Image 1 (cartoon, rainbow, N blue to C red):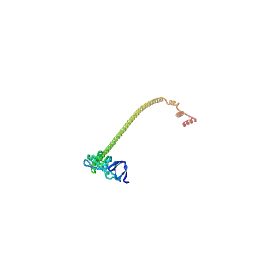
Image 2 (cartoon, rainbow, N blue to C red):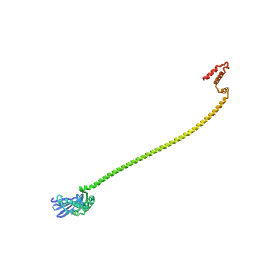
Image 3 (cartoon, helix red, strand yellow):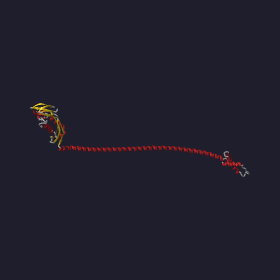
Image 4 (cartoon, rainbow, N blue to C red):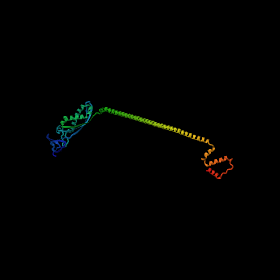
Length: 338
C-alpha cells in the first residue's frame, strides 16, 4: 500500500536493504517494512548446496577419462558475494539478474580446473587407482582457490564417485585382467582336478593297504588255525600214544596174568592128575568086592536094591526059590516114579 511492503527472511537467508546506494540494514532472519520505490533488497542464501558434475578430462598419457562426482559449497561472506554478483530481488520476490543461477557454474568451473591439473600429472592407470588421492588434492586446491575466495564461497566437501575410461579403452584394460581371471579359473580347475586325482590315488592306496592288511590278517588267522590244528594233532597223537602205551602195559599185565593163571591151572591140573593117578593106583590094587564095599556107604537105597537084584541075577542058578514081598516092589516103584 502506497509503495510500502513487508519482507521476512528465513534464518538461512542473508537479507540486505540498500537505499540511495547505502546499506540500511543487513542480516539473517530479518523482518521489516520498507518503501519499495526507494529501496533495493539483496537476498543471498546461506545454506549449503550440492553440485553434481560429470567431466571429461585427459590424463598425462593422452587417455580420455570421465569423472563423476559431487561438490558441496556454501556462501561464507554474503557481503562480498553481493558486491561481485547481482542477487537483487524484484518486487515479486524473484531475482532481477541471472547471476544466482550462474553461481554453481562458477564453482563447477573451479572444480574442473583443479581436477584437470590433478589428472594431468597422472597416467590413466594411476588415475583409475588413485581416486582418494585425487579427491584430497583437488579439495585442498579448491580451498586455496582465489576465485572462490573472491566470491565469498567456501567448498565444504568434494567426492568423486567414479573415474572411467572410454568403452574401447576399458575393454582393452579389461582384456589382460580378464585373461588373468580366466587363467586363474583354469588353474583352479586344474588344481581341483589334480586334487581330485590325488585324493582318488590316496583312496585307492588306502584301499590297497586295507586289502593287504586284511590279507595279512587272514594269513595270520590261517597260520594260527594251522598251528592250532597241529597242536591239537600233536596232543591227539600224544594221547593216542599214551593210550597205546597204557594198552601195551595192560596187555603185558594181562599176558603176565594169563601166564600166571595158566601156570596155576597147570599146577592145579598136575595136582589133580597126581591125586587121580594116586587114587587110580590105589583102586587098581583093590578087587571088585572091596570096591563095592567101599561104595556101599555112599550109595542110595535104590542103587543098593539094583545091585542086590544084579547079584541075584548073577547067582540065579544057585537060587532055588526067591520070594519078593509086594511092599518092596511097591517101594521100588514109588522111588522110581519119584
